[in-house]
Image: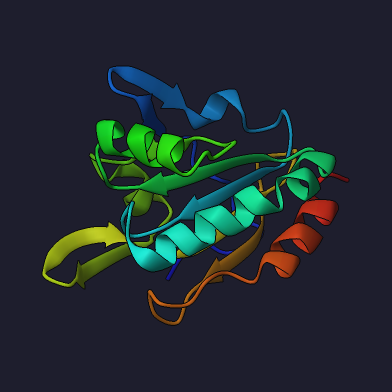
Length: 157
């Protein structure tokens, strides 16, 4: 079961690029944060998800959000994925599975691959508290983007 609203957001270390660590702690508390955990880069539904956010990027910018995609793919793959789809937000690598464990979104198995991320969204407020959590009932379901933006409006207050 993923972390619930009202809980503090774990400040984990991920990778933004190869050999370039990214500390979520550096962003928490500075602006509302959206974490988009998804199973695997370059898969069909994951691409629909990240491209939907890209295509509505102005709405996320207007809400002052820092948006991060997170997958267990290597930082090399995630950089290529973000570039190929012209994403205006980074796709962070959780290759070491620290974030999926901390946020309790480990999917034990998907198509023979073990320990990938459940498709889950967290909106974190200015105090570093989770304000919204959504978990897909199965990997083929995309998040409710209007709900995410509504949660962002509340997280910015």
